[in-house]
Length: 167
Image (cartoon, rainbow, N blue to C red; front, side, top):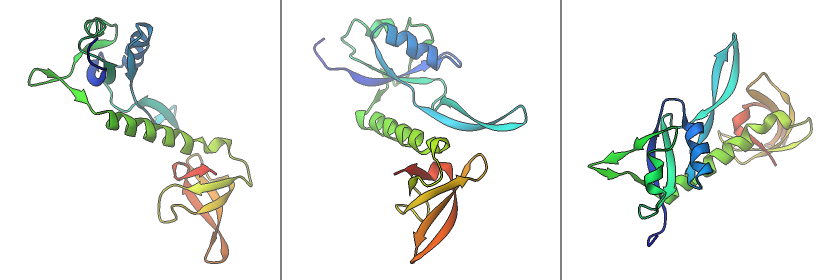
């Protein structure tokens, strides 16, 4: 193990990203498959479901000199390494960091179900980004009513759940 591990990209078998991640973990191999919440219609109702951000792909942190490098291809759920011109695709660490940060922010922002009337919130995006307010109530499944202090006056604002976070 002369060189340090780096992130590489591998393909998974159809809908087996979670299986691949679990099997890699059981072998002591670090992997990452970013998860996003997607609105789907099931049984006539809109629901948020978690799905891999990159269906059919998984990021794997390993060194090519490591004995585990060759175990990856035979791991259940993994199809093969992604290659460009015969070389395994390397992924920069800062890109992985950005995915992790975005995923964490999204999880925090979508946690509005736990907010109660009177809780302090901060707006994450949109024309009122950075303003602080007070959670009033849910406004449907995907929106929230908040009270903000704007131009010296309290105003009600209806925003998407993803746009606010508990402050």
